[in-house]
Structures are given as structure tokens and as C-alpha cells.
Image 1 (tube, one colour):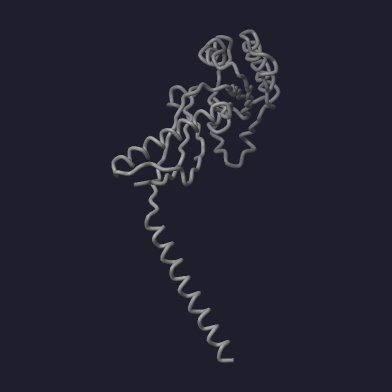
Image 2 (cartoon, helix red, strand yellow; image 1 turned 135 degrees about the horizontal axis):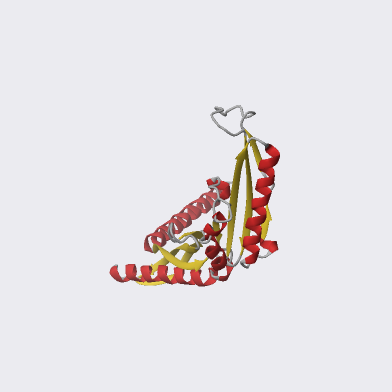
Length: 234
């Protein structure tokens, strides 16, 4: 019985000593491991590859049938203008007219001379950016034909330029961002009298697409930031 107790005591003592040396070794390792975390930025300017151009027409009057017919007549003029200048029928969609009866509008103050406000929107969806931009600058030709383009709702009726071919430039941009991150890490290692080691961790940030500026929304800036952690060596 005494031998069993002695053996158990020696076993526990041995495990305690082994645990101490393991902890000591790990502490030594953690103090020796040094890393540097850097970010690499890549930006690229691209041209939008699709445009959505809503053309809003508004007509007011007191006779609903007359106002409705006038809206349809102006839709025909706009559609002909688009087709005559290179926009295909498949790129044109005409929404159903929206009718506002001001006398029936609970929130209306009734300070209007006309009862009905009818709005119609023709939307051009095209990949021919240059053609659409040219036609947008020629809207004055529609005014000469009696069609005034109204200012629509900002959230639903504003022109949108889209870039959808992100996958084709992703590899190139990730490579550039990673190179820029490594350059920053190498500079840090040099300044700290260290050598740059292998990558410990790396994460690719989210890609973002924004207008280059307010005046050229058809030119987009694509941006990505990568985060890379390198080991540092003596």
C-alpha cells in the first residue's frame, strides 16, 4: 500500500515538473515570435458597363382622359427619339402612368389650378454608355417637340451607371494589394533591423465601387484593402 502511494506521489511530481518545463518552453517561444501587421491598398479606375436612364414625363390638367392621352402621345415622341438614335426596343421599357388626384389626396392643400397630375417614366437600360450619354445631352430636341423632361424622384428616377465585371479584375487587384502590403512590411522590417519572414495570416478586404467624382459618374473607382501579418526574424 505504501509503495502504491509512493509511486502515485512520484508520478504526480513528475507530471508537475514536465508541465512546468512545457510552460517555460511555450513562454520562451511566445516571447521570441514577432510579427508585423500591414495593409495593402489597390485602386483601379474603370468605365461603367451599363446605364439606367429614367426619362420622366409629367402632365397636369383637369380632364383625366385628356391628360392621359397627352402623356401617351409624349411617350411615343420619346420612344421614337430613342429608336431613331440607336436605342433598340429591347433597351426601352415604359412604366404604367402614375395618376395623382389632388382633390382626393388627403395631404394636399388644394392650392392647385389643376386636379390631375399624371407621371410616366420611360427607362433606357443599355450597355452603350457613350450613346446614352450623348442622347442625355440632346434632351433639348425633345423640348422642341413639346416634351419637357421632369425632375423625378431622386431615389427612383435618377441616372445610374453600373460596373458589373468585377470578377475580371479581382485577381489583378488582389495581387497588387498584396504586393503593396509586402512592400510596407519590408520597410518596417528594415527600419527595425529585422528580416521579413513568411505570411502568418492574410485576409482580403471587401471590394468597393464608387463614382470617381460627381461630374463623371460613368467612371468608377474600384478599391480593395488586404490585411497581411508577417513573421519577423532576426
